[in-house]
Image (tube, rainbow, N blue to C red):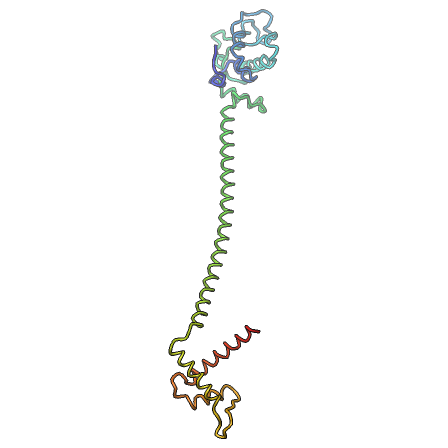
Length: 268
């Protein structure tokens, strides 16, 4: 008998010796163990536990396999569980045939249930390989989920960072727009005057020069106490000139005063 131990780890049913071999982790030695335990002749004197020499078939004798003491102990434990009714087995209920207890077969599911009840701290691979595989798959899924969650958290953090950067860029853009508007307004205000405005400014300058250089009826140079007197004199002598109306002179002089003040401040 020769087969791949991985393919034969789990069986639908087990003889006690087959279950004990797997329970003890001796599957690679199964061929040799079964050749001895299943092909021996009945031996007198070894029937204390099982009441008849022929019932020794399938059960390791005390002197056999001394290097693996668990093999006999666990085989006997399974056989006793079958005889006591703790563990159901095919052949145990059949009273019409002389069926050696060592050759009874127990279903995988019944053996698993018995193991969980009587050996809850043990998890032999041949009974629990499916469970272990399921747990391994579950562990892999949990790890994958944890990795996805970690990546999600990183993505959210990156999104928050990019959102903050976008808000900052938006604020800077809005500030630049306002600055551009302000510059445009300043440029419009400081744009060279058109021909009409230029004529008005020159008329005002000429009127001021005339007033400054003119004399009173008494032959004295003109003298003014304030801006209002200057405007009044300009209106008296030049009010008929286009662009030298009262409101326009008031506006231009106000702008001139401000511009001169700003220029003087800039030069300290």
